[in-house]
Length: 267
Length: 267
Picture 1 (cartoon, chains in turn brown, green):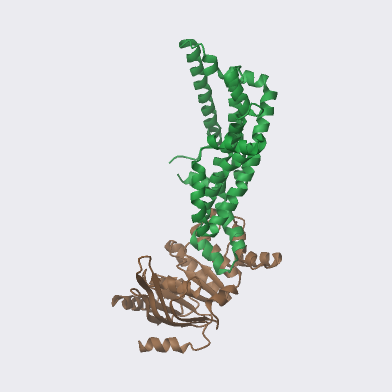
Picture 2 (cartoon, each protein chain N blue to C red):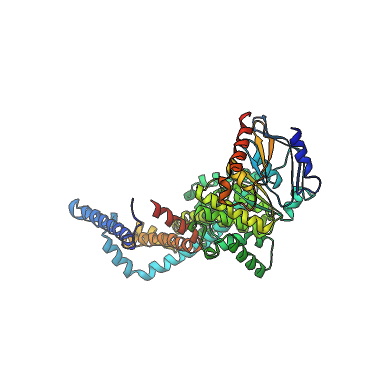
């Protein structure tokens, strides 16, 4: 626990996301209080790739939604770039990617990516330029005029990522974005995501229940345990970057996966 | 595994269907006239080809009457769409409005239109206004209800996405709610369109002045061979109204067409 406290403190005050004693309790209709998160402390540095890892019910999605201002915590304090999540959301500094691609079926790929730019009321020309850039970034230039149903699941999720990045957000929030994809597509997208991350330098908060995925992607993995959801460990991922498929076969990789898996056993 | 229905057989289905209707009609008419020797056969169910001959001979009268009935039905239908649309938006915006409005709407649907039509006629004392009012009255409900359920079926993460971009309410409706509910809106219109025609014919019947319903009534009591041609005209108007809405749907909701086609392919 002492190590945990030290790690949270080490990122200090210039943290991009600063979470202090966050708690979340749901009130059911029956008048019952269900604690979803209790006393979470976490600091995420600018440009960091951090994973929230845990089994279902550990509150990882709840924590992400609190950062995104989609949920209000019942206790504690959270600051994003020195402001409240609400202020950050109103300034349109969040990009969000959900578990399902959440594409609008009546819009082509191009127009799906353009959606947040339309809301920002950017000039038409800039919208076009950004959409083209995003299509190129996720490797879908030839599919701009296709409708979502014409794409595979992996391609749809790429569109979701392109849309999230189109507004050039400060922070990219990803809620189990690859969990519905097959293993091959998933591994390809992992490398793509890291490549995009290197290019864009975004701070990424990545929710997952897949240990290997969190190890492969992250700078740090935050392990959450259920009943009630709490932060039980933060593991530094010391693997070299840039990470390619070979990283998965390094002994350090397996060791880190084993270490994180072990941290769940006491729960 | 059944292949997609090919163009040829797609034409075949309605042709067989029409041939079936014509065949059964002619057969029953034959049975009535020749086998049962019913002296009233020509009134109960004349041969279809006789009906068509009289219809063609009286095409002018039928078209004129039909135009009066149909044009009022269309005006009422358009008013019904507007009212249904506004009601659906209001009810989707506020649970309280929905709870207040719903019992009224249900009760309004329970009042038999057959009883309501003479009441409206005696109130406004004008046939055209009555036709329009009754057609509006009967068509707004299916549109309001279908559209509301379309609004309510919008997935939560689709709304969360726009929330993340701090989109304002009008933008949410414009970019998400309306396009999402468009297929349901058309479902409602397809139900409402022939109902509006029926409503207009019903009001025709209140007087023997003009309209298809008036021809039906005075042929029914006064005799003559125009009853069945008038019924035929009514049927054609009903079919035309549905076909017009379906055509509009085909033009306005291309993505539904695509996804339906894909579902068909995967069967």
